[in-house]
Length: 498
Image: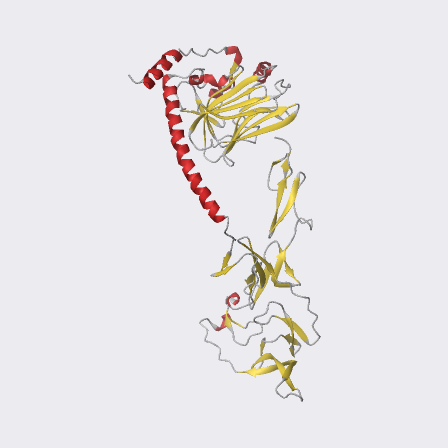
């Protein structure tokens, strides 16, 4: 027989021992489901099949309910907790996927002295308790809201916290020792924090509190042994061999990575930006003509800012207008007909169609006849001949758009051919024209709604953030963040009450 096999057999014989059953003093435990008499509770809970048939299981429905202990049960709980430094809460649960709720809460008027919460939104288990009269919370990342059955056991021994899930030790931490001398008036809640908050959605079975060391062993008896078995030893040997093989592979990969890194030390790498098929290097700048913005590539991200336009002060015979190919308005001569003011390019229908155009006067310099300059003279109405397209609607639905000569059908989409609105404004159709309007949370720049900038609701005091929150400005909106130590109630409020 090989020597290594002899050693394994010798180890198994020497270390084999009988696992003694774990006895439990009934005076040192509380069966919560029995104490709360859930069998006779009809509102919000229903008896269902559990993970096993040895005890009753109850479905906690997603409706308003009040599952809490009677006064004499709360008093019994106070006596059990008194001067105890070691206790364990254990239960078998099946939580509805992606939901959050409280499995058990021992709560006073202001604080939770013991509360175990499972958050499916953050995938974590939270233990709320009180230390020296002040609330504390330990967040233990773990996904329990997955629709599967789980055995959960949270053990506290003075300042030592231990979490088991499905008989596996998940977390072990040192915490501030919790207060166990519970004040009068506390209440025991199952499947919720209070009347309206922390409603657990799912099934709870075997809910108990054990007041003795290593209470999790009542849920997982196989953990009650201090010496490994033969099977454990063989698994340990196999695990060491697997780790050695993995270590050899990781060493080879590390050596390869170090070689590659030494080659890259002499390379200069930078992040680039790709926009509309064009590649820009880091710190390159360009003009985004479509939106009148100056853009820069910064570490692979494109940052753009709208071009700032200087304020215009046009003469009485001019109007600020947009000119094709330019982002800022310019002063152009205006036309007046019958008391109506028209800008360059606008039309009016009298007996014939007339368009406002700007006349240009040319001047030649005497010393060099090849040089010439021109100045804007003024706006004049010019008669134009334009064939209007046929319309496919009845004559009563014909309308004349503003500053145009050809009629269109009612409901015409003026935005398809109308003003050019910036990225923070949007085009809106009216009966006879289209205009640009700023999106919600933005304000026009210099009175021009084609270009809009963000409103800082926080600085302007235009927000609804209440006490215990901090206003954070965002593009087009704002957010109310809770100050440290407070929890969210709604989008605008936070509270310090856990």
